[in-house]
Image 1 (cartoon, rainbow, N blue to C red):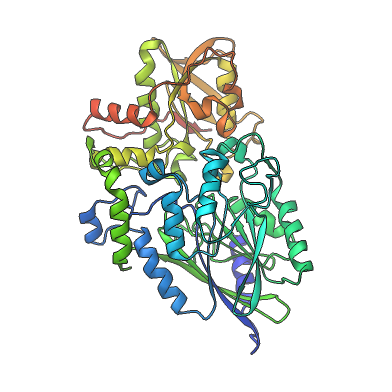
Image 2: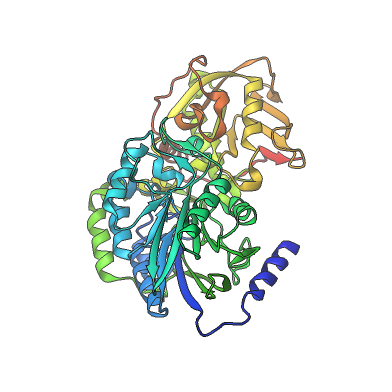
Length: 525
């Protein structure tokens, strides 16, 4: 509470004393769009056309076209930037890779974006194709790409654009742990964001640029550290943590902007549900003197641009046969929000983990572990289409079975709860076991205080020395999300099972109408 009060006070303190020569700029921004070109439901998954017509849906590129045009009309000087993760999340990405994202971002008129970790999901080659297709610079300062032929000499750390006769320095950031989160390949080395940003600030200011904006796909906590530990950064446009900063929504994580020293930090949740609008004022010396605004919700009151609706419908034709197929039914909504699944047991985590374990139980597999970062949406009640399942599980991951010791299971769960404070995707959803963890213990210092494994006699304490058969997805089995203890060729592993989305759809069919539930398999001490 004290932090929020101080941040709000700092923001208010900026508003004094506008001079006639002050420079005003509107920063329009999005982040973590994840291929949501069509409107979304309140569960961040697909929205039926009739619901959209009734004003029950949010987002979609056609609404952003209208909202961005309106916002530009309100401002003499405006820029549009993105905080990363345009890639991945719906069949539009699965089918077209980055081509639709490039087309729609060009249509919206972006001025720059930073690389998100999901921009590396299909390696540097797909990112390069996207960069070649867009009309704006794509930035990433905290990585050495000189050994990667696809990106060397093309992917810039920062850029300078002009607006209203003033130079604006834009710097990109991506997660330092992108190696764990995606597939950048062996030729890229990621580095600390603070040092990377400061180096670019120093270079830009030496060239006479005194207005610096960082586009950061690093998460709200990292953004606050960057603001506190660097000098010369005026604004940070965030992403990665899907954080809503706002002065009007009760569930916001902080004020909009959140001030750390003289730096204004903003972020606008995800999936195109909001358009961020930050209005800033600089004095003659480039000092930020005012920063106000709020995210604008892209609800049914925002009129969709007809031409964009038509173009997206055209692009959707090859996808419709797959995604419109009704595969199951749910008796109630299946909660899959990251603000729950990355912190505690959630209904979607139980569904997916149960489905994985059920698929391979006849092989003697006893334990399922799912990274919550692989769960990308919830499902509403009623008919379930394959498109909805693919929105929840868009990564085309396959089932991986392997043999590990009980101690390795404990170590894996310890990794899973090690970054809860940052709402990271490694948080484990499980089946075939229960665990208790203690958030008061330091990360990786024994937060896991109890693990029980299902047996013929009920749940019994895990034996650290015993051998267990486990199932996860191929990304986690090969060390993704920090699960390095699962990787290696010594675990009798098979990484080429069926697609996780197909497994989940079949489980829903077998248990229709599926009743979501919680049973206390994950708890805190």
